[in-house]
Image 1 (cartoon, helix red, strand yellow):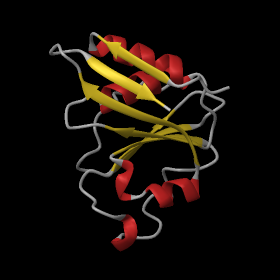
Image 2: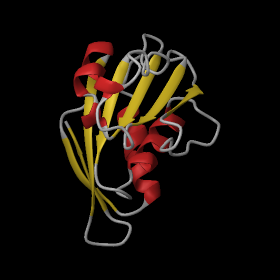
Image 3: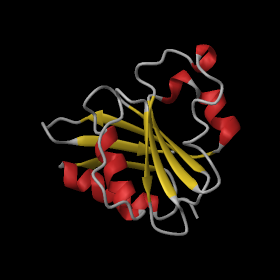
Amino acid sequence: MLPAPVNRQTASAGETERLAADLARALAPGDVVTLSGELGAGKTTFVRGAARALGVVEPVTSPSFTIAQRYCAAGPVSYVAHVDLYRISSLDHEDPDLLGDYIGADTITFVEWPEAGLDELAARGRIAMRVRLAHGPGVHTRTVVVE
């Protein structure tokens, strides 16, 4: 069961990762999680925490230059995918199967900068959570809103 909407401030990267891990436990294979927020807001930090909770043991880094990465996870999900559409203005002019390896029935997918392809994402998987991250009043403080 997915959690009720969340609106919370975290005081450190570790706290953001723990919140993401807690939320990830409600996800199921085939789910898509969108992550929005300005540069440096903690999107990859959030994915790192969620991926760890889903059994990913290798380092989780930003796929900004590679578009996407897929990690082996621990059952019931086989893979965790991390997609970053920052460098893509629209999926309309991209290979129609660009997301094919990253969204599927055996995968939980996290998509940073989803605005470039919301329709495509919704057509390929169930958007289970929409996460917005923002810088808070302190250097390490973040506001995390989950719908």
